[in-house]
Image (cartoon, rainbow, N blue to C red; front, side):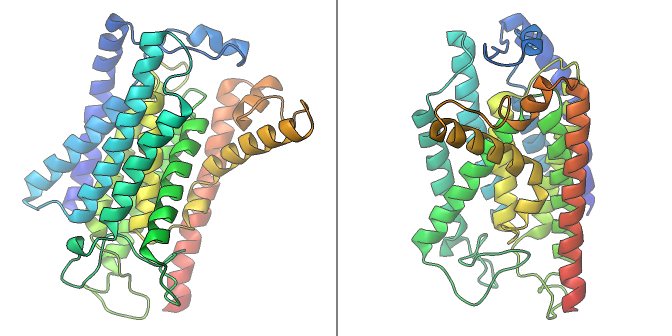
Length: 356
């Protein structure tokens, strides 16, 4: 538990101070955000605001995690290292996307195919390693499972390894893109991520306390390295919290695709490694709604030959076009995220109570 507190606290401090340094450096280097010409006109004033702030979130998380392990004299676990690989690897894909935007002075970075290739490579490598027997612990548990899970594995049948890797790839790419779509208003995605990663911190701590290794019972959890995953969840929560100080309206810096893709991938990683894949639908309810709004908009536009359901997608821009202030949209969407997270935690706990 001491490592969890250290990870969260150190990441918060590093992010809070480091983001201020990043703002100064990125402004000097000219790393400014390009804005979509077809977006709300109120966003045009944001052109030139420093971007790629996700670098600070990633650095704060990684430094805080390893510092916490060093201070507590504990070795990193396979699950934690695997999650950090996913987190940093997807951040690298986002960094390339952001860097191209800056160099080319355009609102689009990597081509969609190139971005998908990067996401696929990272996701597939993660999936292969996550179910590899080489990473089994002394109880023969791999970081990920061959079973589909909600709050715990459905043990009725196991999926073929190829299908599991495909499912892992789908969850990772879908969630990373969902957070990326949500990151369109000052503080929106950052604040939502604080709540969702905070929820996963609690889930991991609970799974550790009720682990089959510590207290075998009908309701115990067969999750590998839950306490170490809690350290990373706390570190990401703290890093996002510190970054939010500078990212809240009016934002002094944006996380960019560097941050949104890495945070979305980390959420997917937690869902996979904690055996709560379908529970992510509740925790990430806001991200799901934002993604569905884009899918519905594009699909209806093509089928109806030019008509739209929303004034603009993703959904947060629709409410902007209706005249809502950006701060109003962000706060109300944060409330929705809070309700979704509370519901997810309630369902998670209720399942344990019902089975005990």
